[in-house]
Length: 221
Ligand SMILES: C[S@@+](CC[C@H](N)C(=O)[O-])C[C@H]1O[C@@H](n2cnc3c(N)ncnc32)[C@H](O)[C@@H]1O
Image 1 (cartoon, protein in one colour):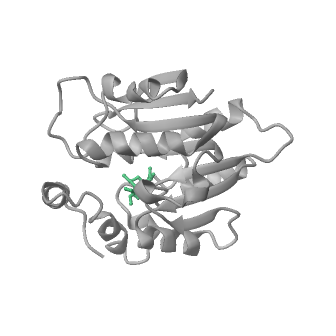
Image 2 (cartoon, rainbow, N blue to C red):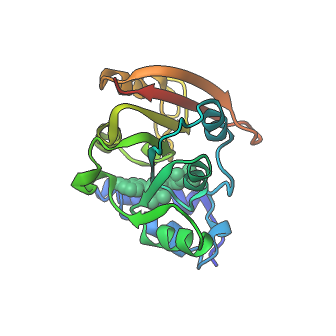
């Protein structure tokens, strides 16, 4: 198994982005883990506590609701949505991520599949009551970020909720970072796409030094 080298990682990502192949490197992060989901460096191996809190505070009524996890990685957040009663689809562009999920959760109710946010199955459009995005926008460059946001919004059913969890930064700072956190102006793009902001949280995580994040809930009316 390869030891994670942050400098080599950032250089590798930058090379792909400069060649305008922004999606070309994701699978390598999972294949480098050689079958061990716990070796994926960005995986927390537990559901986001902010997602769990939202699920607790917004319990499902009687009917079954559909949810989708975008860029689901090794699956913790997708499983959490299923634990709270959602009928969950979880997808990732990295085939090895999906293979890790299927091997990790052999009894899962989640439908795991390989798909591209920029070219997802047409039947998904406008279909999901809950759309969950965690840390995908920040690993995309330039124009792909807004395109990703548009694709996320397009998955939402009328009356549905989009939850966005991401790293954050102050406007004008960290502009060359990989991953590139979202500033307030960028995350507000969701509002200019017609969504209503229901809940906005800016917080620091528990790392040392702490890493600032946003956790935001939007609805589509
Ligand atoms: C930084 S990782 C976050 C993974 C997971 N959501 C988490 O929080 O641990 C970003 C994920 O998005 C996936 N991804 C990137 N672009 C994608 C696309 N166009 N369609 C689907 N998945 C994509 C990557 O393969 C990767 O698993």
